[in-house]
Image 1 (cartoon, rainbow, N blue to C red):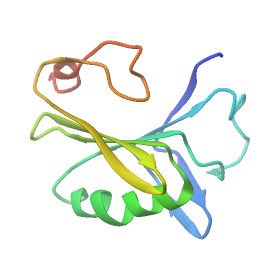
Image 2 (image 1 turned 45 degrees about the vertical axis):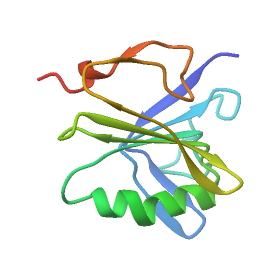
Image 3 (image 1 turned 90 degrees about the vertical axis):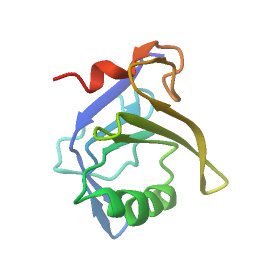
Image 4 (image 1 turned 180 degrees about the horizontal axis):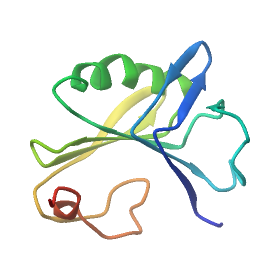
Length: 125
């Protein structure tokens, strides 16, 4: 296995819906090279949305539902104001909460559980 392909703010064309997550990743075996098109039609394996007052309700509502329908397997909701990360896994078409991490703690989070990460480093200025 060769890892992951990460893209910031990719334009996703998932059926009739166009979504732009803050960060998305595909397992390398599902996307061995980037398509030479603007809109990606292959659903990512992982999506991260950074919550803000203006986007939180859409990210938690409509976008989560659309990602589930498209078959995205893992979703992170990152809230810089609360310094919190919520980790979800798609099971039987529904989001299952896996973990919630807060503050400057070392974490291992799906689907990257093999990697240690300091959550606080994401919120440093």
